[in-house]
Length: 239
Length: 239
DNA sequence: CGTGCAGTTGACGACACTCAACCCTGGTGG
DNA sequence: CCACCAGGGTTGAGTGTCGTCAACTGCACG
Image (cartoon, rainbow over all chains, first blue to last red; front, side, top):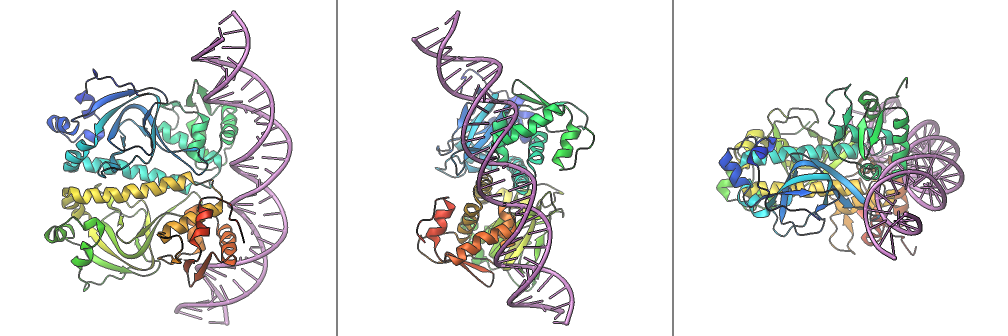
């Protein structure tokens, strides 16, 4: 499971660069991270599982984690992709005896800062600057959830395009973009609420059209502009 | 629009009974509610609209409010039903110049405590007990959103049953339950991501089977047990 | 007395689900 | 060294649920 390296010391400098910690002084950062350690995970390691007692929370340092829960058919549903700087399980830390509502799974090799519940209750809650940052992050997560809900009867190609663009964190219209984590068609299906076959039909077409390509589990967006048109549900003219 | 009655004084006693404020002393409660007023709204009044500058947040005192956003087809999508004790727009109060991500609309006659942004930044953030309660509330909202996502390809009857049961806040299996707010088939459609006609087909069947009935916009669940079976996606035997 | 909203019903069609194959790769064990 | 298996990707054929469109009722409201 999780590869925990006790020799690995926290690098306060690395932490200080995260937006969430940017307002803190070094001593404050020390208090905030007391009892914490950096944990390295490999592909498909679980950080925690839905239903377990919530004893720790985490801050993603590198790579990515997917948060999933089980649906009515006992299949997985992806509810969030957590990337660098994301805080995981923070919102339930103030409830004693709470259980994780979702499962967190490493996508590719990743690292996170693991912190005990007490640090949240004793330290984090006392720093309004930190609360502000957490609430910002949660608020944007909620926004994405709302968008997903609102999209649920858009055409499949629209939904897939949106997910890919979101993960690629598009900056320019003309760049070639590689998604920052390995992502299977099944995971895309699980996060759009559809089936692998349907995802494959859409993405195969895009591959043939040269809009995307896949290199050993890594999806590359070759024509972000075209994908954006799909995301906006417009007819893709030309070819 | 909103009927604002300046003569209406806040009733600290009423506030003190809300779970969210239960840990506070009366003086604390006074500080927490500084600059606030109780606002009464009638059916379909907007408290705020998506896109407006976020100057205030609110605590629902009675009745209910729906939070909606616009989807890809310029139709409304319901993302949350806020009932008594719910905190609205709190999570974006710490961002200066933020805009409301959703529209809040009164369902039937309702009341809420309206508070200015400054009160959140200056007072609320300084009270860990309050932060804890807000985060609890947000965390359960997020949970519902996750559940909705996970349900998106369950049969329509399952999704509608779940929404109704959730709103009825079922306690016992045998009681007859009335939903605490007026709710049209269109609003159910908007919150399940489907069409009015489809909702009507399902609910008409239920009416004919005596599982539910509708009295002037108020839905009454006559047979919660049967509805629960639909919610669990089991075949309803008998009848 | 017209207009708008809520509810209803029927006919039709499309998009995505289901099932069933199949290929290819990498890893594991006899 | 090869057989086997699991996971990822792909394709085709058939089916079904739900969306779409259209028409109609009843009611409230100004």
